Amino acid sequence: MVQLDSAVVASQWSSMEVIMYMLSSGRCTREHLYLLLLIIIALGFHTVEGVWPLPQTVTTSPERYPLNSQAFYFGYGRQSAAKPGCSVLDAAFKRYFSLIFQDYTSGNGPLRFNQNKPFTVEVSVDHDDCESYPNEDSSERYNLSVSAGKASLNAETVWGAVRGLESFSQLVYQDEYGSYFVNKTEIDDFPRFKFRGILLDTSRHYLPVTAILKTLDAMAYSKFNVFHWHIVDDPSFPYQSSTFPDLSSKGAFHPMTHIYTQSDVRRVISHARLWGIRVIPEFDSPGHTQSWGKGQPDLLTPCYRGSTPSGTFGPVNPVLPSTYQFMTKLFKEVSSVFPDSYIHLGGDEVGFSCWKSNPDVRAFMQKMGFGGNFPKLEAFYMESIVNITSALNKTSIVWQDVFDYHEKIPKDTVLHIWKGTGYKTELSRITKAGMRVVLAAPWYINHIAYGQDWHNSYTVQPLNFSGTDEQKKLVIGGEVAMWGEYVDATNLHPRLWPRASAGAERLWSDEQQTSSVDKAFPRLQDFRCLLVRRGIRAEPLFVGHCKHEYQGI
Image (cartoon, helix red, strand yellow):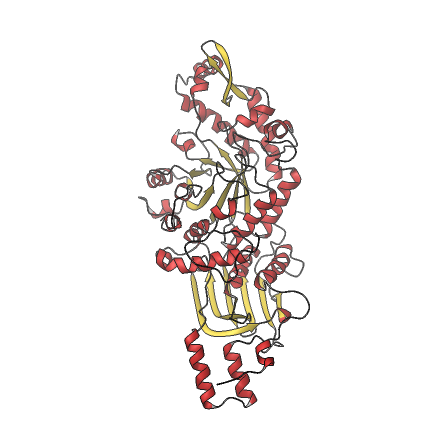
């Protein structure tokens, strides 16, 4: 039997490295070598786990290269427009070093074969957009080539480089002894859709800033690029407005502990930027505004019982000039705080009963020639709000209800499809009208079911609707929604991950290459374990275990 001395065992070499050591030391006879090869075959060769979401094209080789945390470097290519000092990439290098070498501690690490051979990830980008924010036109394309001693990452923008760094980090693996390796790999990659979002609802339950930041981290691991912040709603108004401070002081669950200060919002936006994630706030009106009325008198419509006020309030009052003066000031502030060119204005689920009961509203409708057509009144209101944000150079996103009510809105407005039944018909109707669309209806994953319900998200075909090629180009992407009726910081991440990652692959990857849930399952299992090792409380897909189980409990 072959015996290895303690020096070999302590070095934590891979099986192939042990063979090379034995050969070079003269201790390995032909019989010993044959026995070692049988052991390796019995244990099985390591297969590269791959990247989630699946790149557009990827070629891997069994040829692998050892990595050593003490001889591993990130750097900028000579021709790169971005140079040292680039805030996005400098921060990314630090993050990904820690993500790749999870057990790294400064000082003495374990000995490794060929430990003196350095490995460099060289990044080159075409545009120096280091200090900007990602936007709707930002390219995320990248090319990654991994060879002996070097990985070359080329991208048009820093945002594409960040996506490429994520892919590289997922290619690195450890053998049974803890040594790090990466295989020879070629990747050419880009997203199928430009808009790949996650919605968090921070009104129904307040989510601490730390929970939001961790969500942004996990989003980047799945290559999501839009954080749709449904920041306020009926239950609470946690956004602390500098213009109207009473909105949160009277409308939040608690005026001190359950609010997002201006500093909190800047922190979220800054964290998201470094991951290449856009932050799009939603201030939904005229419905879903009960919390607004607590801090802004006369904003909501007084409801009537017969000829007397009932003491209850309905949607925003659309007939008062003061309403639009308030909205102009609020959205001017919001536009200055949130740098993205998009803003979500809501417009969904407006109940008309309170408007119908109010004599001032009915009189206004007669004056405007609306008769008893209350959808026309909502259209009047939403058109006015869209005009306010358009004047602030913002592109509006609105829920599909706004289109359903035949409202006259600018052609660059984005319609957000959320109604689960008949969304394919809605895709056809809206795109036929020449409007752009974000699809969310099949990805309301706050709805849970026993078993592997991620299949539902994975098998969605966003472009499988009746329409021309030009219509299908108007589908700019999709969004995974996590509404907060039953979700707070205690269960946010297990409910969101890795189920949201199924939608992430559908929105990033080629649909024909990723049509099988059976093929996706082992890959998603591995990715779930990667999330767990990175500190994300991602729930299991089925029976099994991770090599590195969650350590946070």
